[in-house]
Image (cartoon, rainbow, N blue to C red; front, top):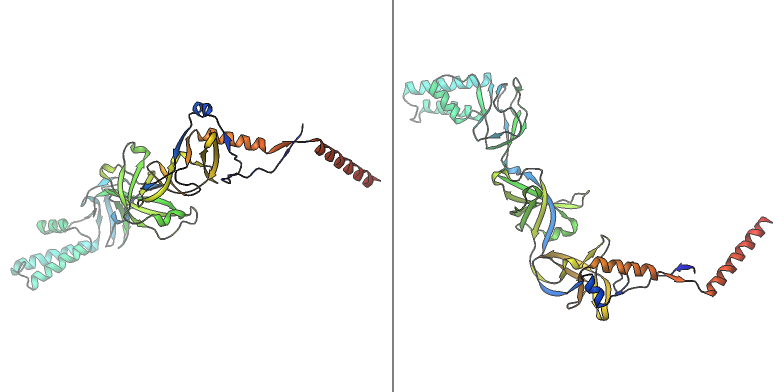
Length: 374
C-alpha cells in the first residue's frame, strides 16, 4: 500500500508539526506527568543575562612626568605588581629639577637669614613660590621636605604612585628619555570594580539605573556579589544587538578579577501577571508553547508569548487563560508523542481510485514520450 502526504491538520495553538494527543491515566502516571494551573499573581520578575568584570575607570591613574630627563632606576619593574600610595616606582634625573631644587634651597637660606620664613613677607613669598614650583614639577611633598632638611638637592627624584592599586601597564625603562606628559605607569585600584552586562535590545526598556543586581562567577562557587545598576550605555552594539549596563561592586580581597565572565540577575519592578511554572514552557528557539491538559486525557499544544520571569515562574502575555492546566513535567515525552502522531497523520493510504488515476497518468506520459521520439 502506498502512502502519500496530505495537508497537516490545523490545531488550536497553531504549533507547526504538533497535534493533540490522548493519554490514559495509567500512562500519564507511568511517565511521571504532572500538571499545574495558570495563575494570576504578583510576580517579582528577574532579567538574567551575562556580564564581565572590568576595572573601574574612575579608579585608573596615570603616572606621567612633568619634566624632561632620564629614568635612572626602576623599583617596580613588572606589570601586575601591587603598589601602595606614595610608593617609589622609579627615580629620574632632570637638570630642570636640579635647578629648581637649588632655587628652592637658596630661597630657604635667604628666608632664614632675613628671619621671614614664616612671616609672610617678601622672603617668605619667594620660598613659597620655589616650593610650589617643585610640587608642580611632580616632586612629592615628603621629598621637598627631605631637600629642605638635608640642604642638598636630590641627584635623582623619586617618581611615586598617586594611588594604591596594581600596575596595569608599565612603559618605564632604565635610561628612557622622558618629556612632560610621558606615560610611565598605569595604576588601577581594584577595591571597586565594574560588571558590564549585555542586555538584549528587546529588554532595554526594562533596565533602569538603581535596579538591584546580583553577579555570580564559576570561579567563586556559592558566592553572590550584590550591587546596583549605575549606568546604562546610550548605544546598541551593532554586532551583538545588545546594550551594556554597568554595575558597580565592592571587591574585598580581589575576589573579582578583570576579565572574569559570569551570570547577572537584574531585579525588575514587581507587578500582577498571568504566570505558569517555567518548566511548563517548551522553547525551540523559533517558537514557545505549552501542552494544555483537557478533559478525558487530551493534551493540546498551545503557542504562547512570554514576558519576564522570576522565582521559577514566567509571565504569559498571550495564549492562555487563568485557571487552565498545563503540563509541567514529562513535557518532552508528550512533545515526542505529538510529533510522532503528526508525522503519521501526515500520510494517508492510496485507494483504488487513486491507483487508477495514477496508472492513467503513467500511460499519458508514456504516449507523450513515444510521440516525441517519432
